[in-house]
Image (tube, rainbow, N blue to C red):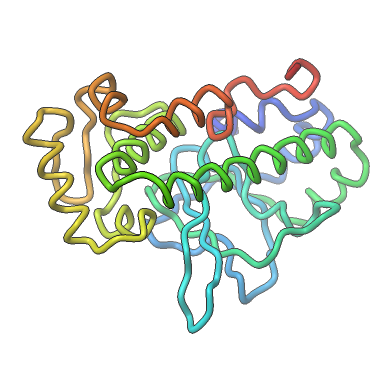
Length: 239
């Protein structure tokens, strides 16, 4: 079960909480498009992403959804139904396939009631998530596709610390709220500039520096605020 320690949030949870959850965690593989949280059904499990990434979508009516966030190894999925101020319904879908560690949501709920340190940690994470959503909304309203695609590729890199992204172009288009053809044209330009290498459902980042120059300023704001990179997470030292 040492694989669960690939999740950078799990290893920062209180030791008693880790010890309580660890024997009940099950590691399983999840495919692209698998629904981890259905906004139309009760949440039965919490999931710690290990090598996969997931996207969060909010329902906007008539069976349509809008992208509001990405989750990876610095996050946990499904805990929103337990928190003191539960979030509105959301759908969480696998963006990049890989592995997750899951357990019954009732086990997590019990630990949330018992541990003040866990409540503090999750409250802090909720605050960061709200700030991140606000920043992404401002980015989408202000910056062009060229900048936002570069920012998104950098975001996917830093979430999992990988340079080979097993992501479909259709998913990138959904996240950026544009047509797939627009993403295809922009990726072709980025590839011709030598910044990435493309294959089916695969993007290899060749130059982080050049992508950073191409990205909007939101990349730096998000990166250095720690709003999607929780590598420095420690509520007791966050000052």
